[in-house]
Amino acid sequence: MTPLKHLAVGWILLASPAWAQAPPQSPEPQTSDLVSSVLVEADAGAGPLRFARSITQLSASGLVSRWVVPPCPLVAGLTAAQNKAVERRLRAAASEAGTPQPTKDCKPNLTVIFADEPTAFIVKARAARKIAFPGASPLAIERIQNSAEPFRIWRQIEDVPSYGATSQDEGGTTAFYGASGSLIRQTHASGILSATIIADKSLISRREMKLTTLSSYLCVVALSSIDPSAKISGFPSILNIANEKPSEMSQLTAWDRAYLKALYGSAKGFSGQVELGHLARQMSANLKLAPGSP
Image 1 (cartoon, one colour):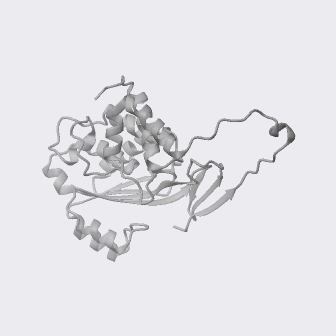
Image 2 (image 1 turned 90 degrees about the vertical axis):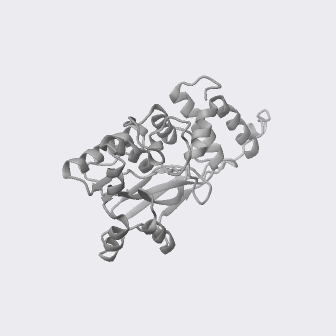
Image 3 (image 1 turned 30 degrees about the vertical axis):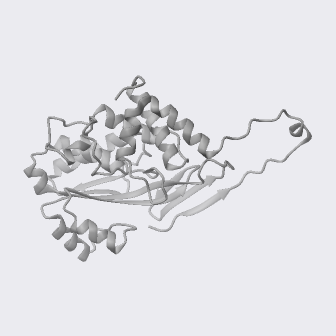
């Protein structure tokens, strides 16, 4: 993938006599004030705020990450019918969440591979240059390769412009944006450009995970940047199947859906903690929770 090309368009406001005589405006709130107000409002739904803080893995620059190009899934390792079923589920979840939407003939950038022996598979596939982890350092690849987790996840996450459209084509990603001039909003955001997930098929089989359960879990981890080891047993989420014995839960819960919709529907372009406050507030609205709900 070619490097991102940023084009900044600045806006200049020229003063005029009429402007000079206008009544004094209230000063723009400082970042610390905005953080406090957002988190206080989000406290009305303290449960969603705790949930969002627990599972959201902020980027290296401290921002909330989300897909900024259309996620185009490709699933392999199961039967042809099962591969297509999981792909359809991922597409449907992306559409419901509000991610950028792919075309029917899009180039895959969200790859899910089921392997009986993931470590051996990764070694062999990399040697044959049939798998890649874009942007990953040798150390990161080694950690993925030697991990004992049932789902080994790599997301290509980069800083992208906060404003305007970001698009991806065969030649790479091109972004266009205009600067807002705000002292509070960030000039950049954290964007997911691709993701590769290697699932341990044998472990999944031993834990007797249903395909619907597995597909639902993949929807959350593939469409967001979450911490798969987060301890959230007190919340109704499909993510709990990664740390606990699978239950009868097989679909995205109301909390999972509310989180994904809030991730793509809440205010963007702020620091990570401020965005988490916005996300939690939107999640509360999605769940229609009353203040004080757990």
